[in-house]
Length: 177
Image (cartoon, rainbow, N blue to C red; front, top):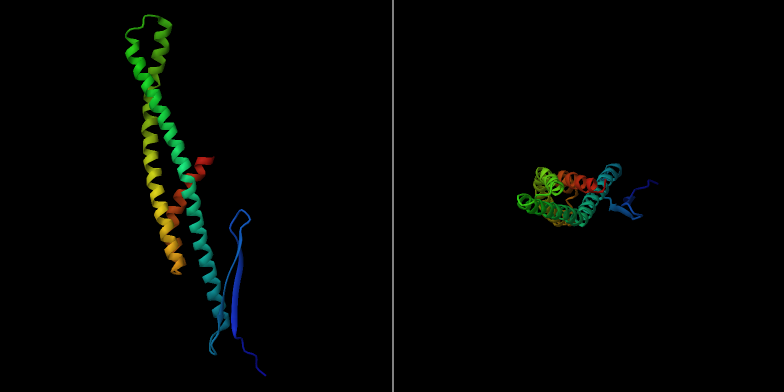
């Protein structure tokens, strides 16, 4: 009596950090002439592709959640620099009318930091623009990865968004360290 394999099943348990485990797998009913080893290999790569696509989507969601904090932090730094520059401008006009040498010295010291503050202002404005643009890109990528996952195009998710993911997670991790 010859035994015949009727179905092949492959599944794995994946950890998605923070104690979130998910079992991902597929079961295939075989035809008479199907090679069960080849089908099992295909299932392995299908499960791996799905896991990778879900991981990319999840990380993009994390980045989208964290970016507003980063944007807010940079906006606050920019606000403080602008306040400092306004104080310097007030000190500049006041310097002409102050005769007390100690007070003139303090005002002159404030003026000395102006160039550094101007550089910081430009840097923060540029960073704010970049982060705002990145937020738009990440939010768009989340919608597109969802569509790709729902259509079963798992490999395309990583192919399209690998660079964006590396860029955005690098920015977020630099915020914390």
